[in-house]
Each structure stands twice: as C-alpha cells, then as structure tokens.
Length: 300
Image (cartoon, rainbow, N blue to C red; front, side):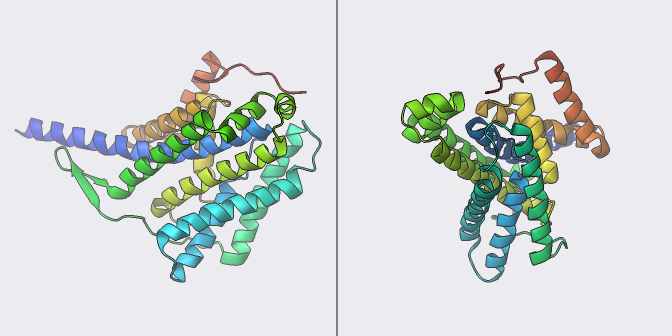
C-alpha cells in the first residue's frame, strides 16, 4: 500500500512538473515567436523585446490599480508595448544603414537599457505583485493540484500561436510578410512595401512578447529586469528550434520550459540553466541550424 501511494505521489509530482514546464515553455515560445517574426521581416535580433514588454506591464498595472479591469489592462500592455517599440524602431533603428546588423543589435541592447532606466525612474525598481487572471487550482489524476493560471497560460498561448499560424498561412498580410522574409527586393517588385510590412512584424512580435509577459508576471512579480531570464530562455528555444522557424520557436520554447522544470525538480534548481543551455549547445553542435531551421545566407 505504501509503495503504491509513493508511486502515485511520484506520478502526481511529475504531472505538476510537466504542466508547470509547459506553462513556462508557452511563455518562452510566445517570446521566441515574437523574436523570430521580427528577425525574419527585418533581420534584427531584438534584445529590447523583453524590456519594452515590461514597460507595457508597468503601464497596465498602473491603470489596473486605478480601477481598470485586468483584461483591459492586458490590452493596454500590448498596445503600449507595440507603440513604444515602433517608436524606438523608427527613431533609433530605421536610420541605420541597411544591412548594418551589428549596429542594429547594439542599438536594441541600448534601447533595452534605456527602457529599464525609464521604468526605474517613473515607477521605481522595488518588486511589485502582479495580479493573476484567474485564481485557484484544478485537481487532476490522483489529487495533483495544478494552478488554474498555468492552465490558462497554456490555453491562451496555444490560441495566440494558432492565430499567428492562420495569419501567416491564410491571409494576404501573412503572405506579404513571408515574401519580405524571403527577399525584400522581390517583395518590392511585387508591390509590397517592405517598411510597412516591417512595422506590422514589429507590432506583432512586440504584442506577443507583451502577452507572454502578462502571463508570466503573476508568478514572478514585477520589477524592471523581470523578463531577462525568460528572454534568454526564449533565445535558447529559438536557437534550439531554428532561428528562422516560427514552428521551431514554439517547439523550442516548450522544450526549454519542460527541461528547465525537470532539471530544477530532479537535479538542482541551481543547475537548471546549465542543463538547458548545455542541451541546446549539444543540439547545435550536431545541427547548427537548429531542429527545424534551414541553412541561410546573410543578405547583401
């Protein structure tokens, strides 16, 4: 009887770890998807993505504290993130010479540092609690209590990813964004404005990051650099899945989330990142373009 009870406890714990890992991976996958969309449309690796999403979170929390419903605050977070990010792109990144990818990379890091400084100046840098969209837990299996917020995170992320897949697979804008990703010159010949498409891609990528941040903040709290760790895990996910693959970004993010939680639970919390990044490096040594990526050549 004791052995059976112990086995049930082990199964329940594994179920909790897997669901928690999928919830974390859904956040990393959304952020990674935003990074890939922006990279494919503009060739810019946007290190400012997380900090800009954090600006949106602080703005949303301020309005929520003033009485705005939490769901509307989520919409505010997405809009503020997209607007601020597009403003940064138009004023800082677009004036750069075309193809100057290193300068663009450095600029996004600078924008990230500026965003964190602005947050500290306006809202201070003290940790804050962030409200959950839902409370409580759901009992599954032998009594494992899974937080409802984790299940909601997985569901919302799945819907968002499905909508992105529909956008790119079934709409004119999605086809245009794919054309720009393949060749900006070809897109121009076909009558597709590359700058307009780039703005849409930035807005979409930043909006996905803001949604990911809104789902992540209730369990992490809120402070200026709260999304730094998820950002680097999202990078691990997109390199694991393939830098140019949106499908790979999602699968890579989910994989990183599950591996991260398994390592923290069954190995050591102090080695979770070591385990995840070691696995990613091992995959890249075998397949440099990632699991789903394709070998690409830099545009000239």
